[in-house]
Length: 196
Image (cartoon, rainbow, N blue to C red):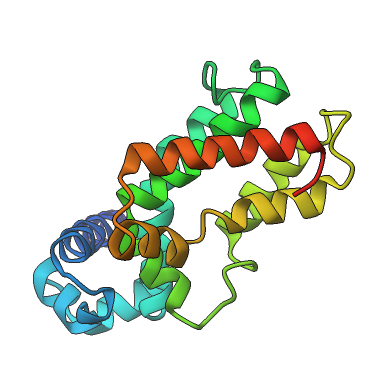
């Protein structure tokens, strides 16, 4: 029994080391494609076999890292105070939720881009996307002027895709605050008109 507990602790420690190493590598490298599984294994001090057993493949590692970074926002949305928490009125909560998604994508540009470009799964089938869409749709359903909450949720989330955020930030050189302001105006317009 103690051997089993020791191997579980090793697995947890290895997983944390891998996520920390991957986090550091994706933060430092210019292109997400520059980070290989071999790089992550070497930086974490584990064998590639350990990496593949724990995460399956590169996309699995990206998803795990993404989810780990997203966890504090998820907790704030589920149980936190305003503006993200459930006690916030729907018309105020929708812009706050979308601003949180946009800020997350801005803060995690390389990782979000790598995950969305991985090709192994459509970003619309990813667990985190389904969670955001479901939450946003549920809040939009509480706003009488929004006719099709499902489509509206998809359209609003499309404006936070990593490739668009990257294009606006890197190519068009739109500052974080300017992008947030433009997006807030867009969201306000959608909510006022009832559809995108």
